[in-house]
Length: 224
Length: 78
Image 1 (spheres, helix red, strand yellow):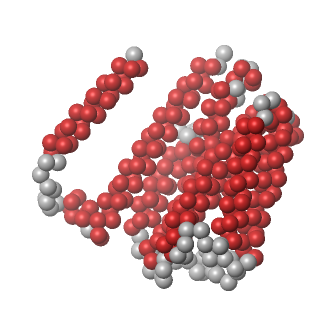
Image 2: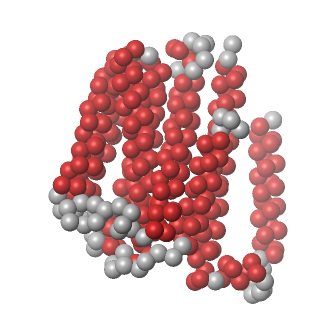
Image 3: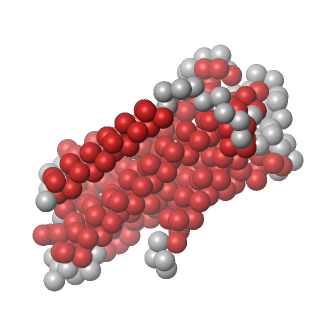
């Protein structure tokens, strides 16, 4: 119980957000109507992605300090699962946009710059596949990962907020601060972010442990 | 051994499906608190139930995968 309590917590939080997210009373506003509930499921995908990419870049930096291959395995696993959540966030966003903004891919700065950021992370994964030598792969991809993260934050968080965007919190549209989002929605939204981030970390830990088992003959017999 | 286990599992599942089919022959028009609950509010609770089942299924899958990896890790310890 001591080691997996956070997995249980993630499952309980997500059960709560699925049930409450679909059934609580929400204000019906404009073209959004019931689709505002997407807030409980679409945005947490990005929070999970940010969490995993942060884990990834921290492990890449630690790899560059000590050249410990386990850090490389951790960094690549986190980037892999993070990209997965990013794709889920993008797909849910395009569906939402189709029925509220009137187009699947409107020229929204946040949508476009996020697609760019995701492509950069996909390039990271492709770059890893293209290098056979395990140490060379670890070093080059760790450096690439640091630059990818350095681009991720301005591309998805800073630039879209400086220009007019259809997304909330940019230009002259209100953001998700406590004054302009319904109080009851926040009671589901905040736990949802935590829950999905924890589930993302769980998936990442599974992938990392599996890859460490695969590379057991390189790491030797010390505890992973 | 594993194949036999999987086969017996599949068979049990098949039997369960059969019994469900048999009981689902007539339309469910019964009243009662559970049925009333699922029919209320435009039947949104049916969708909630569907999502809860899918989510719990994925969680079950993850838990089993987690255990299998733990077992492998223990086996690889010297």
